[in-house]
Image 1 (cartoon, rainbow, N blue to C red):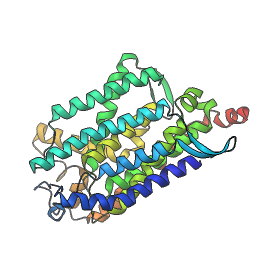
Image 2 (cartoon, rainbow, N blue to C red; image 1 turned 90 degrees about the vertical axis):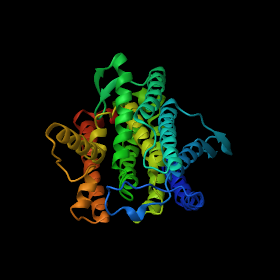
Image 3 (cartoon, one colour; image 1 turned 120 degrees about the vertical axis):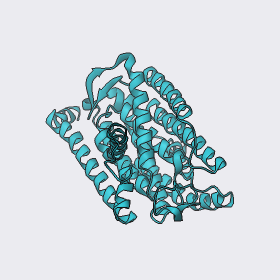
Length: 360
């Protein structure tokens, strides 16, 4: 538990203290956000520093790395000790940093072109395909279950199709978070809630290895995954301090892509693939509105919403930005509460308590 709190605290401190320096650095170099002309009421955001996701990535990696360093233990007393990294944590770190690099290149091209257009679809998908391919290979080598899961594995082994499933999970989650990132603090606030939930879920798995499997709990180290999730929780909260409306800085694609990559990786390794649909329900709804809008316009020549993603629809019908953000945070929290209910309900109804007592 102390490791979780320390990881969150370090990431929060680095993020909340480091973001002002990033704002000044980006302003001096005129690295600002470009706003789509069709998005009404956002012209005042033009030029706001972007690519702030670099701070989030740095804060998480610093916190995650320091969580493996200790200066005292009950067995040896005081002394400098470095604990080894587990495969589970390294896999999440790889997906997190890999997707962040794709987002960074995307943001950089937008800045240099001075347009709201970054990487082409082919280049972005190619990068995501490479990340997904390496992740899937590494996961199989590390012994990660190649099965679809909800609150835990459903016993449906994907075999070679696991590589396709990883690609789908990584790209869909990264793009869903990216689509949602259109209002000040919407993703950083909702993302903190989701990673907070994953911290609880993964810590619970680590404490109940007889129910969830010793390999996931111990060999892959669910606790280390929880530490990584806690670092993301703290980093996003620290960033939200400056990203809340009116935002002083935006996370950019480097932030949204990395968040999506980490979410997908945590879900894949912990066998909560399908539970992520509820935990990240806000991102699912935002993406579905875009799909519905495109399908309706191409098929029938009519728009269902005034503009998508749906947060822009509510802006156009007159909702203040802060109202939309807070209400969407509430919806995100409701989805997370439901997902946690499913997770704990499965543990209770399938004998988790009895197994835990037996282990004691």
